Length: 135
Image 1: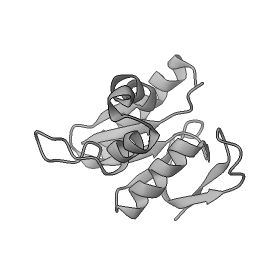
Image 2 (image 1 turned 90 degrees about the vertical axis):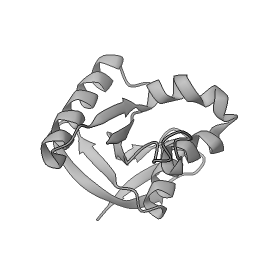
Image 3 (image 1 turned 120 degrees about the vertical axis):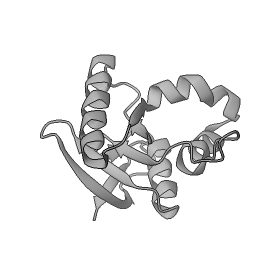
């Protein structure tokens, strides 16, 4: 199982790594299978340039299919912030529409909640103008 870990671009690498390990441990214990958690920055650095732009990268994460295996690139999306930037909001929106699990990991309480969708708060604020809505 491959999970996309949506972290703010400015999040410290140490905090990203802690969240990655915590989410991996939590999901592995719940799913009883191998879970690979890939932070957004890592995926961005490796694939964004080849995608040709934001829309293609967002599609790769939310609905992308691996060319060789024909399986979903990511089986789930986990956010670590309730307030989202534009790209993450689109990833969440497209993933929810595709029926892919989208979750919120509370890094303070180590609790996970299911995400229902997003709400636009201020579309001119590209770094935090959207908010997660919960089931």
